[in-house]
Length: 341
Image (cartoon, rainbow, N blue to C red; front, top):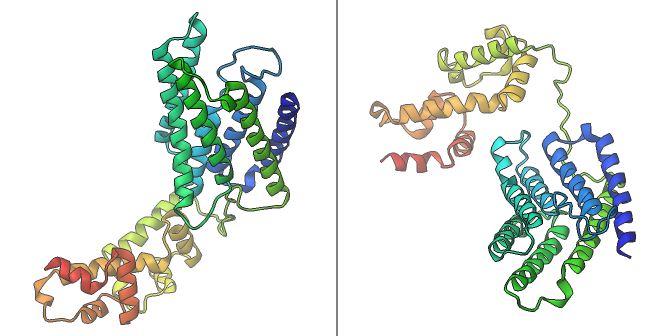
């Protein structure tokens, strides 16, 4: 039965990995490779688990351990949730428990008999992976939007906790929980994994968008801008605000800036949206807000109302001024003025 489960899970896994890899350009790179790495590590676990080895009975291929799958899954969820495009090098630190776990397994192979201290370190390391899963579960349960990982994180976390309890009982020579010996644990985990592959395959075939975030197709894909022009246009745009103070014109439009700087308006939009991560209106308004604050702090303007100062720096209505100011500073203009006093 277990062998059948392993073979089914492997076939499902290979199918899912093939579909994902073929369509990899459709997905955001970081989340794609983290999920791909997670699924590959699951396949290695099924193939080389020392308890249920497909190739050689009793072989101890400790490097193919289930913990690597959990770390990849944890990082995948972090990046899925945050929407970050680039993998941060500091996040490699999350793999440290895996390295420690592998070293402990290597030590155990070299030892003739089990050592209590080594066993305790192994259990503590396993607990790290329970923490990873718990963070995923807590994060999903405390938000309104549910995520498909919850269906696997909860059962895997329960299995790991019960397995760790058994390991602890075994280390101190107590009776283990009868339903969660190593062999049973691996069987249950394989069931969850087989369902995971089936679930993802079903979603992919149904063209679902919630498995992996899709790559956003840029409307500037065929742009002729090169790095030199981008840097120059960025500098010109910033200078036009900081030195020329174009934002003081309440009717300033992207067409006006284009004519003033002799930059095609589509390039202004591209530089702002793609390379400065800001819209034209927000780019202008952030300078207006800072100028408003500068003038508000000047005691020579104490006799002016907030709206009067706002009009001077380029805002042409009270509602847009209040909304823009709160968006940039998190406070209304009146609340901000109170903080100054």
